[in-house]
Amino acid sequence: MKAYIWTIGCQMNRAESIALGADLQSLGFEPVRNAREADIVVLNTCVVRQSAEDKVRGMLGFVSGIKSARPHMHIAVTGCFVEEDVKELNRLFPFVDHFFGPGRLQDFHGWLCNRILKRDTDIVRIEIQQISPVSAYLPIIQGCNNFCSYCIVPYRRGRERSRPAQEILAEAEELVKRGAREIVLLGQNVNTYGHDLSPASDLSRLLYMLSDLNGLHRIRFLTNHPKDMSESLIQAIKGLPKVCRHVCLPLQAGDDEVLKKMNRGYTRDDYFALLARVRQSVQYMAISTDLIVGFPGETEQQFNNSYAAIKSLRFDTVHVAAYSSRPGTAACAKYLDDVPQQIKLDRLHAIEELQSGIQSEINGALVGTTAEILVEGTKAGKWYGRTGSDRLVFFKDERDLKGQLVEVEIQTASPWALQGVATPVRSL
Ligand code: SF4
Image 1 (cartoon, rainbow, N blue to C red):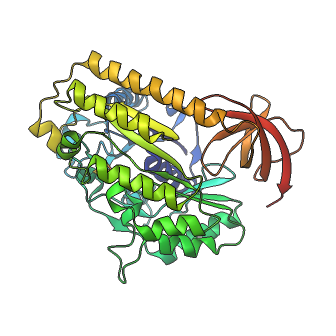
Image 2 (image 1 turned 45 degrees about the horizontal axis):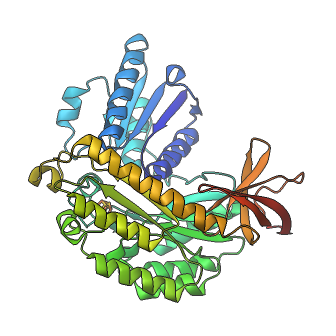
């Protein structure tokens, strides 16, 4: 039996697809790269933007065509396209055999065993797998309690549910045994990790526990809601050498009225104060952010406030997106999506151009310095890897350096990547 998994969307989706693939393989399925060859197709979907939803609908049409020619093929759909009540989805897409909500891996396993393989459902602990020989995703908290007005995630992934620290630790140990040197902790908002556990815990405590793992070299995490960024986390980043000095703190808008309409729970001044505190506490901290342009009613002045914030805060990376109205969200119900598409795109390009200049300057200043790179693999005849601050670095070397920490002297820089020459410092 052959299985094909198609994935779109965030790192959580990618992590869940890796787990689904592991489950399929443990049940004897062989992975294939083409849906036409598969006995089972799993679509792991995203509806955070209209463009993503359009791709999902396109893919559904595509696999429906394949299934008409190969009726024995099974189709399962998961991810944020799947609503709590699947009646309407079943009516619209009758060729789909099973819809299951995001993260509901046990549900998928039960369906696969009972309905497809016709065997008893064993209690399964779905094994996590690595995203590369060096790095692995490890989800630590599911769902979100924030209800940002533009976001569909809390309606599809539900409220926050933290995984017990011992479970996370056991998986991390297993990953390290298989050769992972970097673990990326995932959650819609990792900053609230542990508040729902008994006894309550938090991300900083988890980082201290994970830091004790021999063989693990780097720990990353994303995403951090600015309103929940605690002092204990800032101190853990500062004090724990394995924790990368890199956080993703989505600003989303640099204007107070827009932030209020987005229900983000902080003002522009709160955000500026947080960044100043983080940067003062932790030297060389890399900060990335997300920004939405063209939110309903966003005036030229309000956009200028976002532009000025990006200019002044000098982020290491900015992911900018044009607002996309999502049915089912508060913003869609309350506000007219009234910023014309061309203006949204002009604003998006203005931010991209601004940020490209900032990244050129930040990266340019690294020429002549030495950075520690965790080597991931090769591309076009060069080794590549990332710095602790998540910068991509390429270099040429004859030795096999995969999975090693290497000191690289930076020789040239562009806004998106650095090039250099290497001297291995230690083998892991
Ligand atoms: S914090 Fe806001 S944007 Fe992020 S997943 Fe939760 S509701 Fe969505």
